[in-house]
Length: 90
Image 1 (cartoon, rainbow, N blue to C red):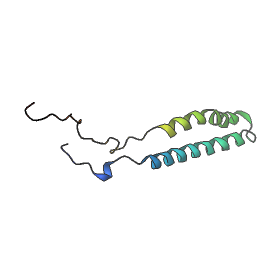
Image 2: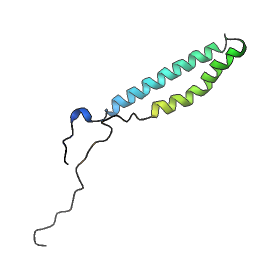
Image 3: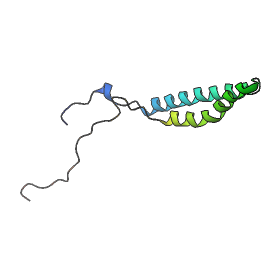
Image 4: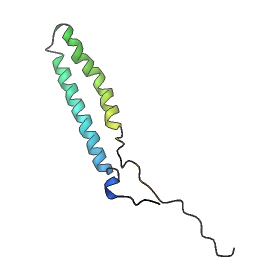
């Protein structure tokens, strides 16, 4: 290992990642809920916008929530492989 791993370059913890994904998904589903409610109050061709939002947002929310944000610390350097012990002179 040529360069030491800095604690600030490590990826986020699984709990932080899960919370971030949950927040992103919840925000998208809240927007979808607003789109569904707007479908009852909007008339004319403007009705197309909340309908598209209500139909497309579930897919987009799942894709965005499950997307991994690859930041500068996304990969953790690990030492080389462990070699089996060999007796000297063998």
